[in-house]
Length: 89
Image (tube, rainbow, N blue to C red; front, side, top):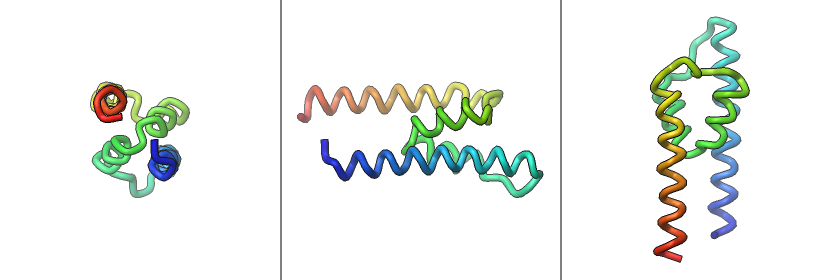
């Protein structure tokens, strides 16, 4: 796999993790929050950071959209990775 793609993927996961933490911090301070739409879009590009942020910060764990949506995104990403490995490489 291309090294640059892995670096970009790692950076997106780190940014997604930080964003989940920032939103949780803002929730405690009653400040302007990061929208759920933004969190879900970022999760699509950094699913491991999203899952880590969700469970480490205990953020959005009661929301069905996140509780079901993030594992679904993970499944789709793993399936896509497997398909690429099987048929394109």
